[in-house]
Image 1 (cartoon, rainbow, N blue to C red):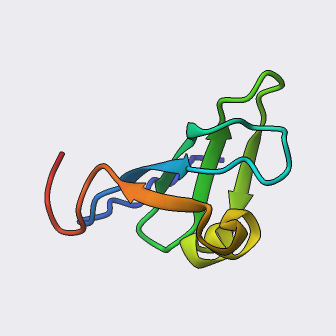
Image 2 (spheres, rainbow, N blue to C red):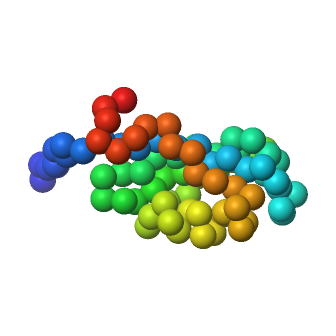
Length: 85
């Protein structure tokens, strides 16, 4: 069986998860995670905590809803949609 690769004409968007207040006392403050938004909206994110982990989300909105802690954590885009890195 041959693997088929599909070419995408859109770019990945890198981001940081920036926390101003550590509500749970687990991850600290500052840049606590980094990730990428894929062209279909799926997100892969890697935590910078002492026990690092990688998580996959359906959308960046899900990341914000789960980890935003009512504004204590924000998504900071490194790349901007439609602009090559």
